[in-house]
Length: 375
Ligand code: SF4
Figure 1 (tube, helix red, strand yellow):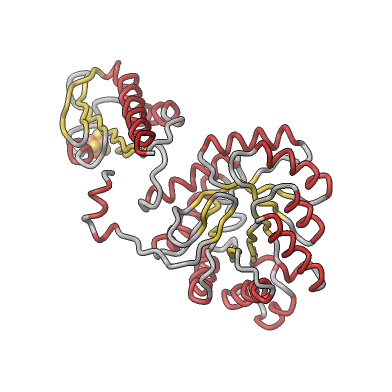
Figure 2 (cartoon, protein in one colour):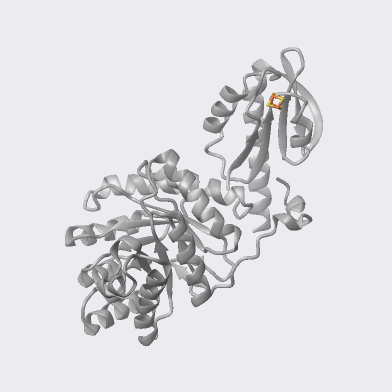
């Protein structure tokens, strides 16, 4: 979709919540920075090769930040080599062991995912905060409905938005008391209603940037739908500075779905955004197979390009008006290419896929050249 179309249409505008800005390594989070997409490795962290390979795959898919679990000392030892190889900043996922947090900070973590209220004495918290300050790490407070503190469960009876927000603010207060403000917060639940209500309340209660997620959302399809409903609702309301889609699937899928959610809301524009019709008896070519092939062949493109692939003239010209490139079926064994919204030339159905790939690649190359020239 052309930028100007979004700007002149007020019903497409999302007014983002004002949050303060922190940094995860070089990546800004909050304070109007682009919403970042993150995922987490699921390889054993001590397996340095496998973990780096997975981080590489996530980077290729467009991950802005990657989280790596550090459950033991072998993991924090491996973290150093992993952090050195990674091009994106890494978040070290720590649960209760404060020593792992210090080791991870020393090993190059850009952010520590840790709840200060869970690591024991204030002396330990102080040590972790000092390590974070010394090594330029930010932190994420990650509240999860499934692991709320006992006193909050007793007070509220069950996980509820109030309990989750109270938990988050208790952890935040500990950091604030130590003059540490480089933190973001998440309040995740596997239930979309609880997730959304908790984030809405948290957004009112703090100016910390928020990391969104519907936790343990499920497999690729159901988890993507749940995440799109939960996070989509929040992002549409302007809430959220970084997102992670949790799927029981290849982490690369999490990045792809994360971008799809942001692209649907016009919040990020990475890669080719294909607009396609569901097809019907009117189609002039096989829309479903074509879209599937194009998605695969254009997966390497990171420049924002919109492409409409429409079966016939019922909706083809109209959709093409709002896309950078478009193809509409309907002639005898051929269809029409649209460029920047206007009919441009005819292509046969046989040549169409290669031709579209060539055109998208050429457009990506010129966008890349323009942005390099601007830099
Ligand atoms: S655009 Fe044409 S081919 Fe596609 S679903 Fe609509 S009528 Fe059918």
